[in-house]
Length: 194
Ligand code: ADP
Image: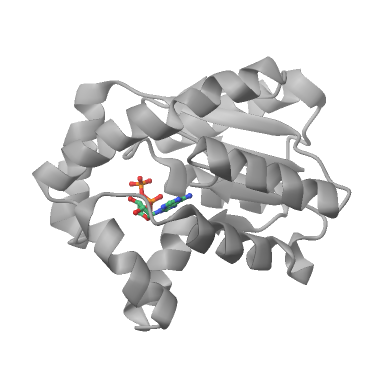
């Protein structure tokens, strides 16, 4: 299975990505996590990415695209992967299309978690307290929501036109959301239930 998981900041993508990927026995590839690991390790990529991330802006496409291309070319992703946080721009969609075409692969589904805006803000404020992420301040948070609306929300239509879109209610308990995702995937193209 090759799946994209989408949703606004705070929709619970990271949490769901790990659970879903494990059940499908594919790696969860989170661009946010890869960037954060690079920031922690103070790599060149991390230093470059950090200024954008701290401001709530997207890291430039060339940087992100190259990183994803390398990651999904690794052996563990040969049979499938779940992308969390990529693609996030129309240009990244085109780049991912090219990567998949080069490898003779295609996408199976694009899962979008839909959430209530107010609940998302509450979740993010809680995460700011619990994890102390440097991009979880209120101003940056708001900016990230705007960037999502402007640059990433349009991707939903792109994938809908391709017949790949699976919209799932992301509200409520983690397990309930996971169950909804698998129900929805089974209805589309028979993803294994376990
Ligand atoms: P969230 O899910 O809360 O939006 P992520 O952990 O997915 O956060 O991403 C954190 C930050 O990493 C983003 O705000 C952005 O700066 C950067 N980032 C992650 N994925 C991408 C991407 N596909 N393109 C550009 N920047 C990205």
